[in-house]
Length: 360
Image (tube, rainbow, N blue to C red; front, side):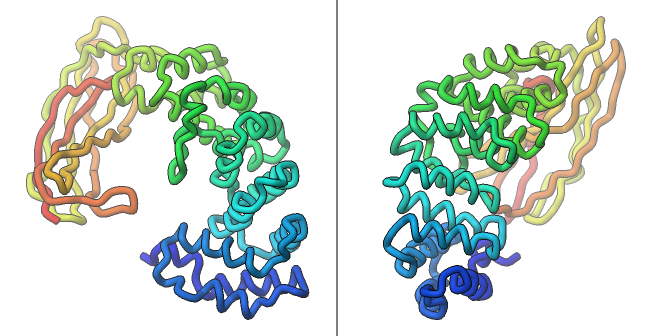
């Protein structure tokens, strides 16, 4: 698989240079291309993104407003997606002294990729003023802008710094989330759920109180709440389980937990199966998960919980469950040789486990 950083490759920069040359007759496309590709092989994905903004600054007018006007003109000719983050990154680097102009630029540029990282630089500089704008964005007709209101103000946005003031005062973003808690766009709802899930890690009681006040009968709101409490449900949080009628003390018996092999190599799959029988006197709503304790380079382990299924079991009812888990390196997980452990969880509680070895 080609490294992600190759999104910023020579072909990309040729197209990028041409677009800016067309947008501004004074832009020296050849000189920019030479500058921006010099030494790029040693740069990471985000290193290439930031380098593009820095080199772009050298080749655009020193007047920020004129430079942004050229960004606007070039934008429709550029590719959308991750590489379009160059535009909001430029705004974040050089636009803090032009707040209103920069906010309007981020509102537009987020529709081409995302301005979620760039807006955080303004939140860091002037939290109150920037949040005021983002509360207004939550009412925007464009779903990309509405998503930016939620995603950009997430307390723990991946690949970015934490917003410590919002962690201390989670109610600062409550108005944004409440405006979006029944949004028609799945793209927006996912962001709201992830924002709430961030809150659950630092402000569990606040987050649960907030979502319990929402209309769970609305299908979009229910979807958000369910995904927002996923981490708490995996941990067996009783209050989170009860929101959707999952009893914390599930009366079920695990049987016949089996794995198809005890020694795996990287690239192999582990097939496992088990049975569950209800021992309750009434129907029980159950959320069934499994966890893998991955061996780490240090010799310790790291636990990861995975979703399996949700079921309602009648008294005495039995079900059989099976699953295949692939063990291969990902950008988010590197595997190490050693003993691993598989656990079966029902409503957040471990009912049984078994071990196996992985060789890398």
